[in-house]
Length: 343
Image (cartoon, rainbow, N blue to C red; front, side, top):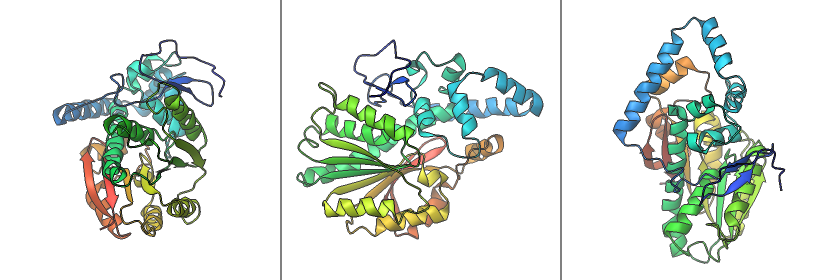
């Protein structure tokens, strides 16, 4: 049990709470709860994108030294800004990403006014939409198979998943929309990630969702963090897949804001080839792919984000080299969420 350094004073009915390694009590994101539900039509998404580009363009026109001084002043003391600075030219860590998914009304007493502005911005809204899409795609693709094979266990493998909130929300969707489908079944949620802080919070979030009266109460799911470097999937990824095969488990793989957005072509292919070696022809992977449109080209000009804007056409050609196809896609600002299957 983690020590609570800063408790959430305004807990909301129907939400559950878990503690970070450094003692912040945070709500467990549940995309079906009104506090987290987010629905934007295409027109609203385009409007948000145009506003974001206009704001960034005005900032870019400032002399560099003025812009840097202004940013330091505005962002001083911001927990989110600290995370963004650590991510300059590299990955945004799992817990900072999680905070961006909370939305402005769910940030706690640790947040500054600028933090609420940041989580209202297009990148943060895109993360929230991405999470909802991932959970939907995972649940929708799992439900028919779980229904057809009620005696088999389920292994969820989450690559670079941090707290694995996409996997948790997929389980929440399955439990609510397909009552009884998870009951009596052994479930394993394995997070393959190089950082331990996100998975540690994810394990506490799962425990909160499994307590008496909570949505996953009575669901037999265990959480495991597997230290992982996606440059060498022949080790840990191959091992957990082999264990799943030995258990005759149904396997679903996900990577939200992870492998397909930050990994090199070689790293993506190496991971997919390990997945393709599994004998289960119905294994599928869900992930997010950075777009390669005008918006993302503009973002690349104004930030040091390490995501690789391949776009869907390039990504389709890439995964085909490992024997996969894009079976489904949800298009959003900044990233598209895809389901990969073997032909």
